Image 1 (cartoon, rainbow, N blue to C red):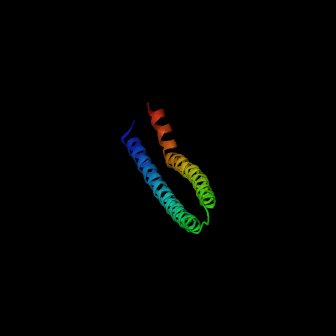
Image 2: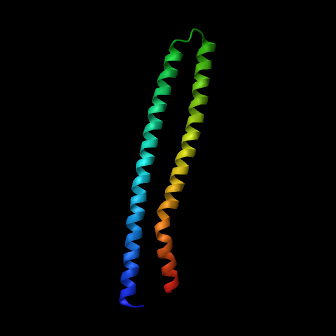
Image 3: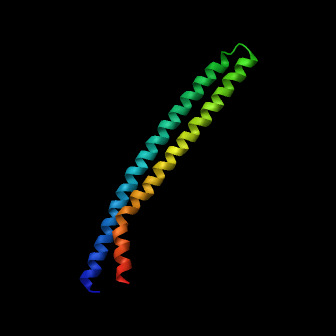
Length: 110
């Protein structure tokens, strides 16, 4: 392997790292926005449930409001966890892509 080959390989690795870093940055922003949106929605849902609970005229109604809130919160959490899981999985795939060619070249050099 010549010095020029090593330089090309190094340049290729650096380009892949920079591309991957850009992917990580964009994905981290998307994940942060998603988490902020979920937190806001969750707080609003909690406040609405609290208002309904405080205006309940009977214990049965209060238990119904609480039960609906817990069910809804759980469903929202599961949906959000699934969505975040998909975002992280996509991040991993996209961040790896720039290195595929570099890893193939490294394997071929052996």
